[in-house]
Length: 249
Image (tube, rainbow, N blue to C red; front, top):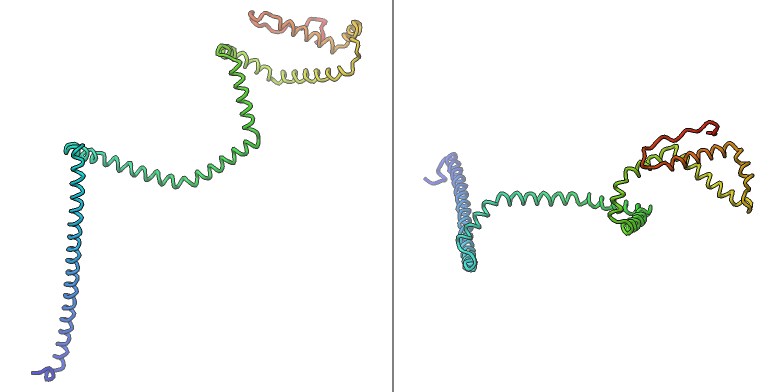
């Protein structure tokens, strides 16, 4: 029976089966082609690996022959064992170095800004004269070192408490006010020197000035101050003597 004599439904069924068979043959053909390419790639890799292995083996043989002149197998094994032992430490060190490199990359812009700020502050300090003042202070320090020896420094250390106490007393408000009045009086006296006559005042003129209460008060204070200063420093300090009756405060 020919195909033309077959029923239409059987012909359609045969065509479907042929299509399926054709698709399966195509899949098998593609799979076979893929496997062939894999085998060729493996063969090429094997050939290349064999050549590289031969070259590496030749290089290793030459290096081992050269190393055998300065080290034996025991040294090599000991070195490899030591490398395996310190491998974790080396790994941590590499991680730390990587972190430091990342930190440096992140901190580089901050360092640039900080350097610019420091440069600006130094330029401002130079404009204000800090560097010139420091140079002058260094010159003073050089003169101090040149004129004072170790004994002088030891004596200064022994008396530093007394010096500081004296400075503290001088810097009290009442002492500063007194010093201010004394400075103003000296300045006024210097101005009066230009106007006073060439002849010095007579004894009677001086005696006449003692009638002034301010003059007598100043003389009393000066005498009491001289008496307090003249007291022997080896004795215990006593309070300043009180004003006598008849003396003007």
